[in-house]
Each structure stands twice: as C-alpha cells, then as structure tokens.
Amino acid sequence: MPFVEKLIINGGRRLTGDVQVAGGKNTSLPILSAALLCDEPVCVDNIPDIEDVHTLLELLRGLGALAQVSGHSVMIDPTRLHTTQPSSDLCKKMRGSYYLLGALLGKAGQGSIPYPGGCDLGARPIDQHLKGFRALGVEIDDRFGWVDAKAASLNGSEIFFDLVTVGGTINVMLAAARAKGSTVIYNAAKEPHVVDTANFLNSMGARVRGAGTDVIRIRGVDRLHASTYTVIPDQIETGTLMIAAAATQGDVAIHGCIPAHMESLTAKLLEIGVRVDEADDVIRIRSAGGHRAVNIKTLAYPGFPTDLQSPMSALLTTAVGTSIITETIFDKRFRHLHEMVRMGARARISDWTSVIEGMPHLTGAPVTASDLRAGAALVIAGLMAGGNTEISNPQHIDRGYEKLETRLRSLGADIQRVAADS
Ligand code: EPU
Image 1 (cartoon, protein in one colour):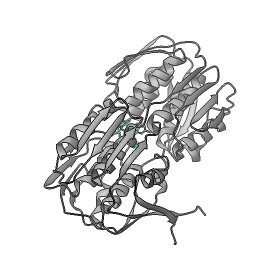
Image 2: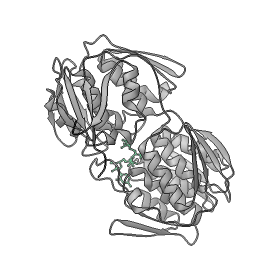
Image 3: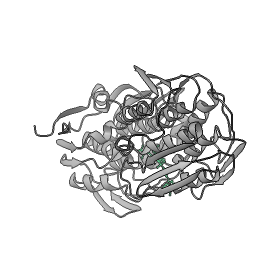
C-alpha cells in the first residue's frame, strides 16, 4: 500500500528572505522527450527534482534510452531504443507523457501511447495533436483510450490549430523537427516553454523559427547532434512564490527567475497593492496587507496563466471587495475554492466563473488537494490562515514543485509533512 501523507501548516507567519526558483516543469518534460530525437547523447541542466520528471525518466529508460541523473543535470543517450510503446501505467501518471508520441514519430516514424493522465481539470482532449500529426502524413488509430500512430514517411505540412494549445504546438514541433521538408504551425502557443523547447531543438541542429510568435516554421533535418542545454526557470513556481509572499504580507526575494515571463501576474499584484521590484533575475515581493480585490481572466501566454489562477484565488479570499475570476482554459479548475470555503472563504463557484467576496481572514481546516496547482493554492491558504490547516493528497504538489515545504520553511513558514494517520 502506498505511504499516505498530509501537510500540516500552522498559518499566520510572514514569509521573509531569499529563495531560488527551480527549472521549469512544463519545459523539462518536452525537452527530455525531445532528447529522444537526437542521434547522440545530450545533457540537460536545471532539471527539477519532481515526480513528473522521475516518471518521464522511467518512461525514457523503458524505451531503451539511457538516462543518468547527477543533481539537476540529466544525460540522455537515445541511441539504442528498443520499443516505440512506452509503459501504459507510467504514461497515465502524467499529462506530459503525450510528448513521447511526437518524439517517437520524429525518431522512428511510429509510436503507441495511452491517453495521458495528469491533473483532472475537466475534458483535456488531444485532437489537435492528432490533427497536426495527420497533416504530417501519420496514420492514426485512436480507439479505446489508445493512440497508435505510424507514418510511412513524415512530410512537412501546414497546420492551423483550432485553438491555442501548448501541448499540441510542442508535440507537432517535435515530430516536424525530423520530417521531410517544411512545416508551418499557425495559431501556435507562445508560452516560454514553447520557446525553450524550440531553442533546445535548435541547439541539436534543428531549424525551428518563430517560436514565441503565433506562426512557427520548421525545416526538417536528417540528423540531430549532441548538445548541452539549460532549461529556463519555472514560470509557475516563480508565480506561486510571488503570490505566497504577497499573501503572507511578507518580504521575499525570488532568485533565478525571468521577470519578463511574469508580467501578467506582476501587473495584477501591483493592482492589488503589492510592491514588486525587479532586477535582472530577481523579483522582490513586499506587502503590508490591505489588498484590493481584482478581476482575473485566464488566457494563453502572455495572458494570465491558468496555472496561477488557483494560487491567486487564495490571495483574493482576503482582499477587500469582490473579485471575479474567469477561467477560459479548463472547465474544472475551481476545486480549490470549494476547499477554501471550508476555511472561511466566501465564494460563489461555477464551471467557468467564480466570485470571491473578500473576508478579513481564513481559518485553518482539513482540506484536500485535487490537483497540482490546487494543492499549491491550499498551501498558500494555509499559510494565510489562523490555526492549523491539514492538506491531504500532497503527492499532487510533489509532481510539480521541488521540495516546496522545505523551501517555504526556509522563509519562515511552519509547515510539516507527516504520515496521514498521525
Ligand atoms: N485542447 C483541445 N485539444 C487539444 C489540446 C488542447 O481541445 O488537442 C484544449 C484543452 O482542453 C484546453 C486548451 O485547449 O482547454 C489548452 O490546452 P493546452 O493544450 O494548452 O494544455 P496542455 O498541453 O494540456 C499544458 C500544461 C498545463 C497548463 C496548460 C496551459 C503541461 C504538461 N501541461 O497543458 O500545466 O495548464 O498547458 O498552459 O505542460 C500544470 O502544470 O499544472 C498544468 C496543468
């Protein structure tokens, strides 16, 4: 039986001090998958030590790749793959396993994966990924929760996505990197992890242009060579720490981040009444409380990220006035608010919109993390609340944040991980 744990937070303490941001989760997953495309070993630095990365490394090893970890560096030797069908059980543990399909198509012209798992945020189809692969000449048998994909020849093509999809954009980019001829992706996602993956591919000799705009052009190449690459810092972890600092009326300097990636959040924090100072790769957050309510609408980059909607709603539970949060990306992303209501938050919650009436304070209560960012949001709510908050299912948090509670403790938080029955 798996070891069951919970987090216990004794809230009401200001966070103060300095903290370092880890490498990006949603950048590391496509980049480690893209390493499969290479004809030689590659080294990737700044990989976060998180559960989703551990799962992906196991998946890569299962395909026959060598994956050696040394601290935050990972060496992948993809030269001796012996299967194009990754472990079904492992794929179902994480969303990012869908990147293996794009990489296997680019490398071997075929791949077979189950529908990916990961956070349950409502319907998360992959029809756009498959539409992109079909445009490249891939035959797809998509039945009973499995995708079998095979291409006699992978040929460049033009793809217009029906909606902006981060996973779809990156997955097609991976396959197209080694297709014959040119591919153009229209209505492409512009997230920092799309740009980082393109930069990694280019570091191996791929020809990807335009990443970061909504038109990406890829000229397929015959081979990709060895590379050493460093992934960018985690945009969402940076934002989570910024919000946690503000929510506890703290004074925290977040090091090793990219302030330009945080503009939509920074603008909202300033509107709320939080002080934000930036210098090179440091963001300092200072707050004396008295936060004002604001409206948030989640959008694709450079809009406000859906992944920061949950942490931000924790902060807004005690802002003065009424905040309206409109979620436009995922239809089940307000579960954390139901939990915060147990802590005294006042919120009217529906699928796409929630209205939060700010209360003077939250009170600790037993709550359950339903997904990764909901878990992070509940940690922030627990740090803000008076008394003890017990968070069940903290393993969701471990999928995407490296040693979150250790780092929060170093900033003065009283947060412990204990066995669930203690
Ligand atoms: N969509 C489709 N068809 C597709 C693909 C997407 O309808 O083929 C829809 C989705 O259902 C959603 C929207 O398009 O409504 C956007 O989805 P997108 O493909 O951009 O998201 P994703 O690739 O499934 C990644 C991150 C998420 C992050 C979103 C949005 C990874 C592994 N996951 O998901 O991260 O919320 O982009 O930025 O990179 C997280 O880290 O907690 C997380 C959930």
